[in-house]
Amino acid sequence: METQLQRIETLIENIKNLPKSESAESTIFSIGSKGYYENPTTDILAFFIDDNAEHGLGALVLEALVETLPENIRKLDCSLSSTPEREVVTKAGKRIDLLLEGQQWVMVVENKIFHEQNNPFQEYEDFVFTQHPERFTEKDPIFIVLSPSGSVPSKYPTWIGISYPSLVASIKQKLSDYFISQPLNKWVVLLREFILHLENMMSTDRTSEESINFILNNLTQIKEAQDLKIKTIKSYQKNLLQALQTELEIELNSTIVHWNGFPAIRFAYVNWPTDSDVVLFFDGRDRKSFCFNYYASDINTDAQRAIADAHFKELDCGNPWNEVRDTCRCYKAHFEGLSSGELCLQTIQAKMAHKLRLMNTFEWQIRPTLNQ
Image (cartoon, rainbow, N blue to C red; front, top):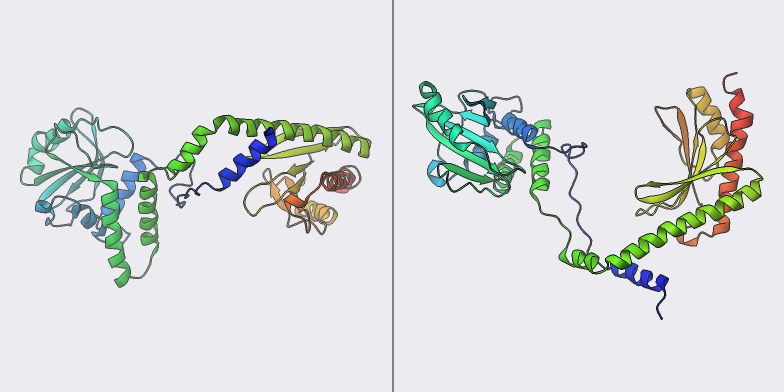
């Protein structure tokens, strides 16, 4: 009869054979914590549409936008008579995302990245036709909804839908022509980042149907594997804690945390005067290995760091770094010559005991001399 471990081993092998999902390339607009949504996206779009702005790209983006319009209006003069206007307020207090004006035309652009199209379109039309006749009477009106799909509510036939993918494709074509004749500059790089970010936002999830079906059909076994991992790590922590306390003849504190989704077990003598500790990190990321991180707290000056480095730097230790507003000196030690699969529990225990003794010596013999 198949055992639990055998079932999990089979599950893992099947997971390894699933197609790898593609990760979207990060951009300067996607690395923030809240992403980039309608208002800032429209601000950037307005900047690049402005043919007199400091980016020096002229009407490149405006021309790209116009080329996505119906053929009968693509020949309009792609130059602005005034700076693009954002959040233009109508008489009813509604706000037009973007208002563009040329000598012969006026363009109202509504930018809808994620939300449903429930804007007061009639109010925006009235803004042009009746609220400011002295300004717009002699100009051809163009009403645009910029959205992922390029669709427009059927009851507003005056409006033209432009999809973000079609706008991005048009800008990319213009940029490719620009690269041939002009040197690279920061604004071109920023525009490239912007359109890449738009592509990422508009793209569908890259998870394959095969992967989705596999996960849905194996939820029980996956939970079983997760539960076994949690139970095993907790059991190992308990056993390692007992073994270390016996070997070191001292009481230890120990907790389990998770870094990048992988377990890390923290150890510290209960009588240490600071928050210093030694951490066994089971780093399962690609091209990473199990390691020890050890943290000497309350190290605040370069002189103190030099003393700590002289004590902690061993052959298995890489370059130290600082954390906690530069008040904690940090070290990482790998298992020299051994891969994660070749490690034995005795090797881990011996190395942990050594690092704990090293930290204990620092806490009680070296730390008192740091301020002398």
